[in-house]
Amino acid sequence: NYEVTFAGVALQFSPTASGIKRSSRGREFNLIFFLPGFNTASEFVVITSYDRPATVTVTNKMSDSVSTYSLATRSFVEFRLSSDLRLSTNGPSNKVIHIVSNQDISIVGYQGRNSFQDGYRALPITAYGKEYVSANYIYSGKPTSIGIIASEDDTAISIQTSAPISYLSNNYGRINPLNVTLNKSQVFHIFGNVDFTGSLISSNKPVAVISNHQGVQIPHGTASLDYLIEQVPAIEYLGTVYVLTVFPGRSADKYRIISAYDNTNVTIPSISHSSIIEKGNFSEISLSTGTAALLQCSRPCLVAHYSQGSFFDNTDADPSMTITPSIDQFASDYQIYVSPTSRLVSTFTYLMFVVLDSEKGGIRLDGESLSSPTWITANTPNGLYATTSVSVSKTNHTIEHISSTVKFGLTQYGHSGQQGAFSFPSAYIEIVENPSSQSINENNPHANLILICQASTYPYATVVWYKNGNITSTNVNTVTKSSNTTSTINITTATVDDGGSYFCQFSTT
Image (cartoon, rainbow, N blue to C red):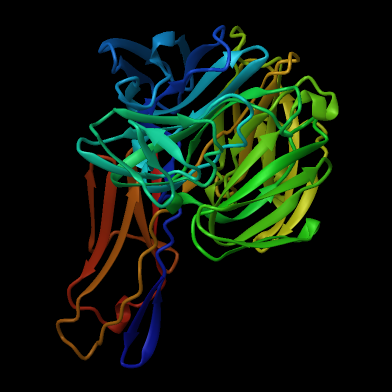
């Protein structure tokens, strides 16, 4: 908000940048895959287009082979990858799939087989960050991994693993970080027989962090195990308020709340949980079916959601891991694709919704209201939220709210009926900048007022400014450079008449 004072009179300038966001939609991505727990596994990628046709170029950075795909509006393409791209040894490599599009797209990567699988929502390079805390799970006889991908040349990376590891005959860990340098679209892979949850990664340039478990048992020590893979959002995009729920058909799920900062107070009132955790540490809780719970962190935290193995509740679904979006990362529309042919996409596929209870009736699945859903509610500081899940067919689906201003969370979950399972969020949205306050004095004849809004969006954004609720174009200047749009109102001699409530609105068309 802007607070501008003229001769002691407070005048409010309130730019509300509702479209300022970083999103899981983008135009440049990097994907990696790891050595799976079983050699019969395979990998494939699904690319989704949105409101414009897209031309997508896919480059195998190891072989430099290039493929090009043309996607119509709101369509999909899926393709398999060569198994020689799997990360299997410690150190740097070019085992990266680099994807560039001329329009907005989103990407999901799957890996596994019917009874041993998971998938992840890939984030574009505009959503990369410089600080991360990782999520994984207990070592269960098969290695765990972290993959770090550079988006620029000469990227210096420091890795403080949560447990001791060895690389090139040297030992590293929390106190003795492993330092490496990568070039653009290179990956550094580190693996070990440890739980990498809470490992800290920092860099001088934006990177991506992807976490993997070759075969996890949840609960630890049970017979059933599964593959985990998930891209982790950077610390700067984490939230503080979450709504927790249980995967459909399961009796209880696990959550890990991982602290990105010291002295983080974690509370879940409905299960009487309260803890204070330091940076890189975590609390683990169990949530029973039929329950939705408010989770609050006093400082931004990472929340990982785990389904449990089939031996836990006699369900033909094994462990999976997804990153839970905070309520300020919700969107108002989603486009998803469930493959009708691939054996990696499960027999049973569900969409899990989180929305304000007062707005739940406005959700539309392929243009229709949800069919007789059972809603469970949780009180939050932002209002009463409701959660539900619905089963969907193997095809493409559009999910939206009748009001574009209503945001809701959506997670995809599935299992094969042969113990395999996958889960991942359907999108991430993040507000990245709110303008700061300033003061000027009208007695100064040269008083200069500058209001600035900046956004990183895909597709490229248009900007509209409002003064007292009415569109204004006076003194507005907008500049777009690459994916960044900056818009300013510059009043060279401000007076009381210039006072009012201002806000800017970014939109992508």
